Image (cartoon, rainbow, N blue to C red; front, side):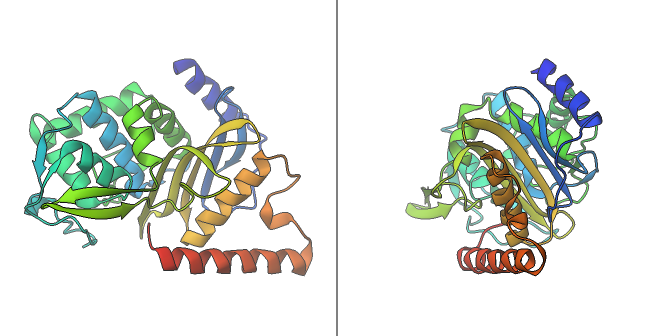
Length: 296
């Protein structure tokens, strides 16, 4: 893994990879087998990462090998008082740690992620120390994570560092399984509640996804990490600070199209006014679909 990260760092530093056009502020696509940078745009810009943070939270929790069947009680201190984000996980609910992980990763629930940090052996301070050590071990030199949810704008990183995090997270079977579940039913207070993946590409026709995590805050914009397979190629992609869900989705579609061997991404299938019309039309359709389905 260290050799891959070193190759990645060198590739970015000397990259002549395709850089656009993409709506996300930062874009990085790396071929998994070789570390070759396929697409790069502002890969070293330090920006807030929102709920992409939860991949780090999950790794640190799993590294500690806590009992996944142990029940965690959702406490009032887990409620988001910073952004006042909503949650379908009620205070007082007692949920198995494996299901709390499912809620934090698949449906990006902030109360679930907060409870994982709070119930870490030694408490919140020990959790923060473990995160700091994990960041250092992965060589994520431009990354700061202060809390487990990603709600804080002080949780920052770069697309280059987040590829390292994605590669590491993909080595955890629990994380890859959870983040590629399209939906699941979690028992809460004796009642089965259906939750969905915040990434609507998971389970969608034509997508082969090995790892996924979305993120959103006002400061971070729309973010996405995925490991995908297209046309026999495996790659990790990071999209940061897209202005809308449709922009993030459009960038992901363009990347998959490029990986599949098209001469140009979806936004360049035509010239001039025709290209702009195609772009607007696709974004409008994606926006309608994403608005109807929800998700971050």
